[in-house]
Length: 133
Image 1 (tube, rainbow, N blue to C red):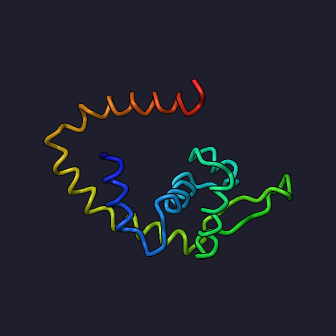
Image 2: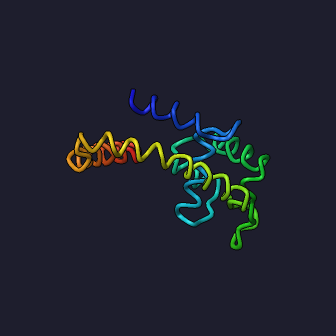
């Protein structure tokens, strides 16, 4: 329920027509300062390649990403964020700051330091399950 409510709140802050998945692609590429293939993105987000292709296509239509030919294999295309994509992502992050500040204020009563290790255990478990363990 927490994940659902957070997603709904987050999507309210996104520019019209942008999905959480599209933002996730922009954010990943910029946070990691990298380019990736659709296959690599699909693996990272645990979706099928056709699903990721659709997500990336919509970002390309908005001018937020562009495709680069892979230097070692011209058949492979890498996804790179454009300046417009960087600006869009940074605007969303900026809009999120007051929300995170409010959460940090309220959550301090819950002692985030105490629940973080438990959340890391849950994430570790889910990561193992993702990889088939």
